[in-house]
Length: 107
Image 1 (tube, rainbow, N blue to C red):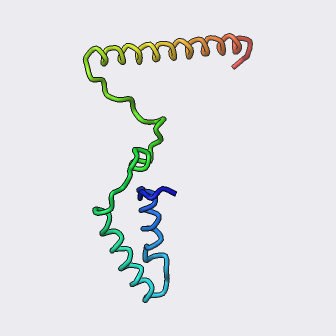
Image 2 (spheres, rainbow, N blue to C red):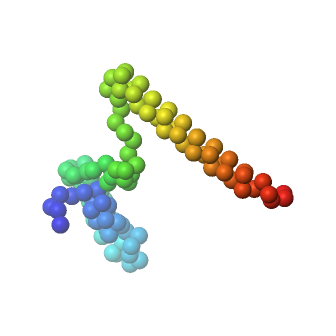
Image 3 (cartoon, rainbow, N blue to C red):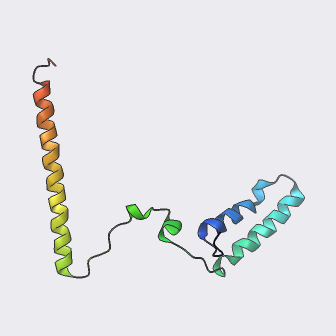
């Protein structure tokens, strides 16, 4: 186990201290005090955050980095255009193949 406190660990502890977890009014008050104390430490505790922990977004779904130059932007734009064109061609071929298969069927 890593000694660094991550957002997930912080939230786990916060959830365990939540006053709604207990029914006894006396315990509820103690849990509330502990919850508020822990919540107050949020700005003091140095978290080791990753993008995934901060946002819940897996790295595979992260957007690509922004282009730094106009040339990079145009290259990325052209690459995206080619991908869309290839996808459109595959979709057209699929539609054409399906329509040939449906030609003998009565609708």
